[in-house]
Length: 640
Image (cartoon, rainbow, N blue to C red):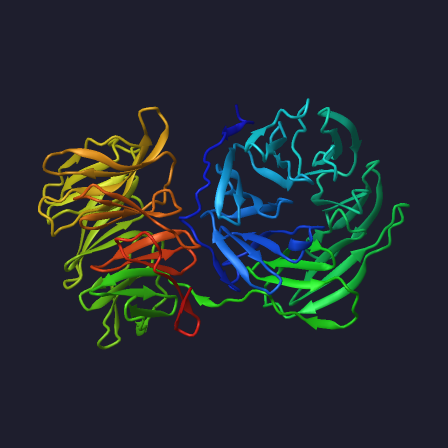
C-alpha cells in the first residue's frame, strides 16, 4: 500500500570506532535547512545543531566551534534533539523516493536506527521527555511514533489516524499531544488512552506552524500574513501583514513572544509579537536590525533558546545574536566561515598525487607534506594524468577537454563533446569517452581523430580492454537486456555477457596483469530477492564471474578502484573497503568526518577524496586514518 513505511528497521549499529568528527568553524557547503536547540537543559542550552543540503550534522558550541559529521549524501531537511543531550533525529530526502528518518547518538557518532517512508515527512519532534520521536507525514496515516527505548515505529499508537500533519508536539508531561493539519485543524490527543480529545477548525495551509507561550498560542504564515491563533479554541485573534518574501518564524514553547525575521537586501530585521494569556496581542515591533551578511545571502531558518537566537543562511553560515531591543543597526559576524578551498578531484602521479581545486592544480604527497602549485585550472572539475602533463575535463557538461602542458603553461583543446560528458579515460595516446548515455567515442590525442565505437541506450561506463575489445556497462532496461556487453571495435560484433543484474557501472581492470579480470559494481537482487549492490569480477577468457563484496541496499553512486592486487570500493557510502585479490582478505578503513567519494593509490599511500573537499590519508595496510587534510584558502595544507 502507498501509505506505509517501505522498510521498517533498515539498519542498527552501536559500533562507532570506524568514524571520527572534525572540529572547525567551517560553514555548511550550501543552505542550512534546520536548527535544533534544547530549552531548559543547562548543560546544552548554549549549543545548537545545524543540518543542511550537504548532508552534514554540525554541533556548534558556545565558543563558536562546530563538530562536523556527514551522515548522508542527500540533503537533511529537519533535525530534532533528544532531551538526553546525546541523540538527534534527522530527516533526509532526495525530494522523490527516499524519505528517511534516523536516530543518531552524536556523542559516539553511531546510528541507532533508521526508517524509510513512502511519503514525505512534514514534521519531526522529540516528545518532551524523549520517549518518542513524532514523525508527521503527508500520508493519510499521518503521524508515526518512534519509540526511542526500543527503536521501533508505529502509526497505530493512536486509535485513529491523524491524517497529514505539519506540526506534532507533546505536553511537558507527555500525557497529551497537539498537531496541526494543513486542512485547517488543530488536533489534541490523550497519549495515555490514545484517544482524540479535541479538534478545532482554524486557518488552513499555514506554513511554519509553531506553538508558543506554553502552548497557549499557535501561529503560522500564509499569503503575506502571519496568523496568531488561540490554541485552545482555534480562533484567529490576530493577522499581521508582512511585506516582501516569506519571513522566518520561530519561538519556543516556553517563550511568551513570537519572533520573525524579514530579509531586506543585505540586512535582516528581527520583529517580536508580544502577547499574554488574556489573548491580548500587540502588533509586531521591530527590535533589531542587522547588516553584514553577503550580497544575496538570506536567513532561511532560526531557533530560540533562552534569550539567544541562532540563524542559518542560504549560503551555509550560522549567526548568533540575542533578542534584546536595540535601535541601532548592528554589523553581525557569522560564527562560521569559509576556511577551506574545495578539492574537486585527485589522481596519482609517480610517488605523489595531483589535487584539483576550482582555481589551481597542486602536486603533493603525505610524506613530504610539500604542496607545489603546478598550474591554473581552466574551470574544469576533473583531472587525468597524461605523461608529465594533465588532461582537464568536466563531468556532465559539454565543456571542451583540454591538455595542460606544465612546461609551457599552454592549454590546448583536444575535443569538445557533442553531448554531456559522462566519463573519460586515458589509454596511452587514446581517450575513451562516454557522451550522453548513448555514445562511446575514441579520440587520438596526437592525431586529433575521432572514432565512434558504440551507439546504444543506457550506457553507464566503458573500458578498452585492449585495442579491439570494448566492454560496456549499462542498464538491462535497454536492448540487449543485460548489464554488460562485449564489442569488437573492428568488426562491431556485439555479444551480451552472461552476468545477472539490473545495472552495472564503475568498471576497472589492470592492463599490466596478464589475462586480468574486469571488476565493477552491479545492482540486482540476491537469492532472497532483496535488492543488493555488489562488487563483481569477470574474466574475459574463462567467461567466469563472481561477487566479491555485497551490500543489501541500493547504492547507485558506489565506485570501485583497482590498484592490483587490491580492489577498493566505497560501496555503502559510509566507508572504504578493500579486497586483496591474492590473499582473499577483506579490509575496512575508518572514515573521516565526511563521506568518501573517490579513491586513489600509489605504491605507498592510499588517499581518499571526501565529499566536503578534504582528503584522508591511509597506509593501505592499516585501517586508521593517518591524517585528514583540508586545503586552506591560503594555498596551504591544514591537517587535523
